[in-house]
Length: 101
Image 1: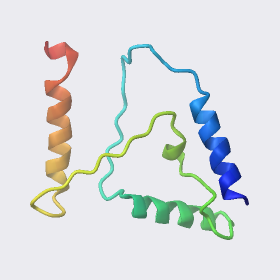
Image 2 (image 1 turned 45 degrees about the vertical axis):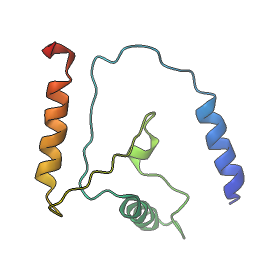
Image 3 (image 1 turned 30 degrees about the horizontal axis):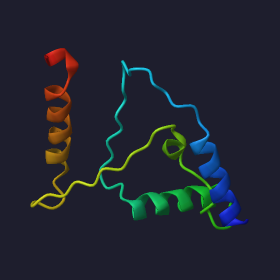
């Protein structure tokens, strides 16, 4: 597989997509704990190899194919305390909600 050709095709299709200017009414936020770049890559390779692929790097996980995907890295003084991260996201959503204005 030619990686440069595949990357150029993916970039061209993303840049050619029509811009959505509508206002979102409902947003679904997937909050995953322990889903760093290395962990997701390992999961992608493992899932593809379980399906019979020789290498696995050429596949994608379901959430990687969403139209809009973002990565947020949050660090804490207390390592491995994911409850604080979830509470932080919940408070951010509640405070910034247009229904609270």
